[in-house]
Image (cartoon, rainbow, N blue to C red; front, side, top):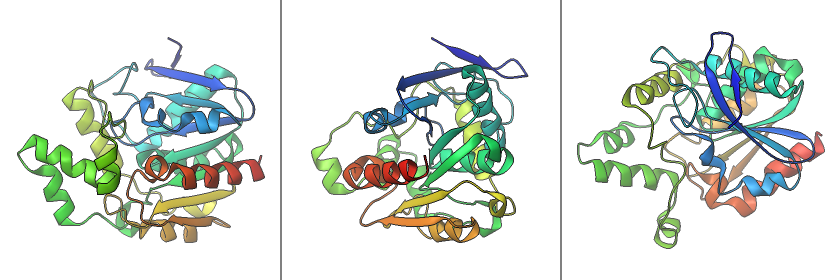
Length: 260
């Protein structure tokens, strides 16, 4: 298992597949690289894809200390430096989109083109999920809370015909403290002031029916990043990239290849 090591000594597990131009894939909060398993092959055909396990997940170290989305971006750099990669495309979904925003804003020379999926600028300008969504995820019946999360990710029709396993509902091996650290990192994200400095060609993608990370965040991001393109996937919820793979995959691939 290959690892990159940060300047503070944290070991980060990473995975590389395919051949061609380089593409970093960044997953959502409290998830390891398996988030991308259902769709990664779509990108492996055209790109050399790089994933890694965030600190606190998968085979990476799990220090019990504050995490931030901006810090996760520097962890991405540690992986790229270990691989000798100076510049790559970046596709981040959910919290991975928040991490990707910092990567593109703070290290513009390292990002060729950028795709931000089901993401948000966070902070005072971001649109927060409703209290009804929060309550559904916080209910004491764990099975009911897990079902609520699945229904935020996928449509009922998809769930009826796809019994799992699901790769977007969290790394089951994460310690509880690491889950809390990830939640705090995502909740503390606020990139609003940095977004206008992003120079990479950017595509913003979001499901129209996403209430987990409300769809209203997509035009906010696209309007804040110079020249960004916006594509909404009709009828999709948070895991648009998996359920609506036949639409979302070509959208991202076409954009990245146009800016390759």
